[in-house]
Image (tube, rainbow, N blue to C red; front, side, top):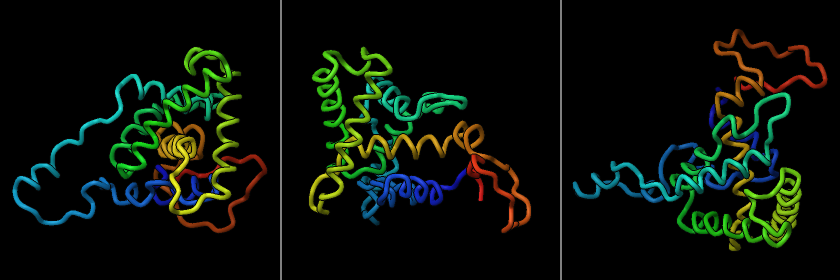
Amino acid sequence: MMNRRDALARVALLMGGAVIGGDYFLTGCSPASSDKQGGDMKDQATANAKPKDILTPEQTAYLTEVADTILPATKTPGAKAANVGSFMAVMVRDCYTPEDQKIFMDGMTKLEEASKKQNSKGFLESTPAQRTALLTALDTEQKNYGKTKTPEQPNHYFRMMKELTLLGFFTSEVGATQVLRYLPVPGKYDGNVPYKKGDRAWATT
């Protein structure tokens, strides 16, 4: 599969900036415990305990629908086939700071409110076309926000959702083997591989 560093680089390129929580994703540790070293036995037991989920199954399913609107199935599978919602839930839990976790959680409420304002119904009740129109508007909103955002200002919740959708999809088995070109055991390095317009990118390097 595509390694974490390559996946982050690809998503950062697509999004035009660093991926939120990317450093923690690379190290595989939780932001709440990454800076903590040593401690007594109680601290160690707490650190080794299984992290508690902060998103409910219903919220995770909701995020899967959001992700599938961002990356719908076409001739190739979409985000739902890769179960991206579950990936998003783990990333928010393990790789976001408490501040960004709150922004993300509040963001789901804001997205639902925006759907009701624009479509007079919730996101899940909206048609595919209405969902796409809503998320397109939110994407424009986050891009405009990012143009003037300072480091001290909070991140935009929809940027987080879009980043996690892309990252989750392209590091999944479905994304790597059915959308990208995947070679389980790459051969020798060849710096002059023929390329035709429209060829899929490689999942392995």
